[in-house]
Picture (cartoon, rainbow, N blue to C red):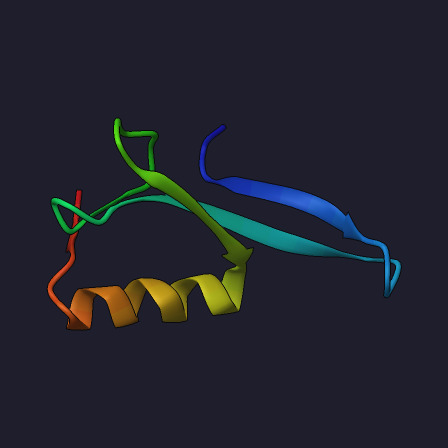
Length: 63
């Protein structure tokens, strides 16, 4: 997966653009590709970027 996925939204019958990032909390890293010992964060595009920016404010680095 390349970090972007389009899914049907069952509640509204529309499509949402979902983004994914892998978060390594120990190393404070954000990656847009799978990395070992990380958790996948998935969110609708607008929410996703807000979360990414908020993580950089607390010291996370984008890889």
